[in-house]
Length: 501
Image 1 (cartoon, rainbow, N blue to C red):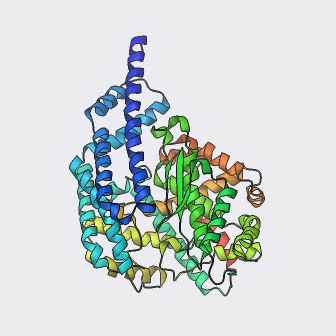
Image 2: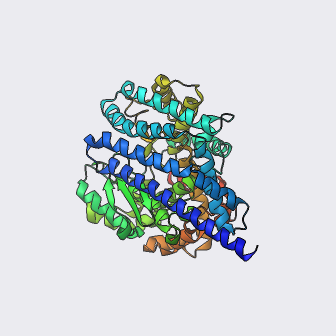
């Protein structure tokens, strides 16, 4: 390449990346508005907030579909770019090509509809009234079908929507993993249900919310949360959001179950520590953004389950529970309490580590049939309850405990749920690789030294942003392609020991 051509390429690439940075900042601003709506905004603020988020969605969509961006992509396609630049081009081109197929007015309508859906869902859940939410859900399903059809009318619309959240592993991989989890875990759960083992439960009565908050803040301190770049708040449905400069976590408190808040907080910490581990000098670029939801969920599940539900963690943390909540028990008792299996639990976010995946499979099957048109919205409560009974042997008494419990469909997030199980499976694979590379990871956890694990995850996952596709990232980190083997082995060994199977 001549000097002149190289200079032109460099100038075009700089213009291209500046456009991408501005576009990313619009999306991040919308994220802050969404956080505020779920955490702090007065209930009556919804009409204005709906218009604000719709406006930002339109601006972002216009920037993503602009002729300027198309010209940059076409010019740079033929340029001599390095591997990182090619990765940025790959990620932006994929988003651009999908977005250009979707009309701007549809994007705005989806944004406004889902924003208005949030208070409708909250009210319907509070009133246990699915019929009040059904027209809104019907509208969202219709809009998301239309969205998928614009992107690719010749493909399964659910597959198109799934790729919004996991573009590289493929729906066939998700279906294969979920099928294996159903085959392997259902018999294990049945064995546990028939076991005579009695696991400890040292928690009795109720626990003050302020004391619980002190406990979860200490957990965040212990694990290494950077308070200069984060904050803790409460929300009806715990979540994390942000950037490498500001990654916030939320939790919720149940008076009679302090482990719920602790587990939720550690889970969201895992999301936040991934976000905070992204390279700061790549902010605004795909190289400074997380690698989709399966990888993101792997980070939250790794910290929640492989650290927070481990015996070494409770060897470390047992006395701190006593300090804050006045519960004096042996580490093994807390460990058992944190790992009890509840097949009759109705609520996904309260589910144990094994039955959780049955909740995901149920939702996956229902939303796939909704999008395909094989299931009517009016049929959702009945089908939901039937599947709960089939998979877990329990039937909800109300829709609030059933099909109204999750917020995801309110946001139009069809295709999101499978990434929870994919992330759990990947967490086991990553943790096994970290154990192989680090001298004594269990000992580090017991001593409260999490620097080695943080450094390993940053080196092998976080710092890469979207440099690699999902499976390539997994191979870089673990030396193997994505596999469920490690999760199945981990679950069988852990719960076999706990329940004396």
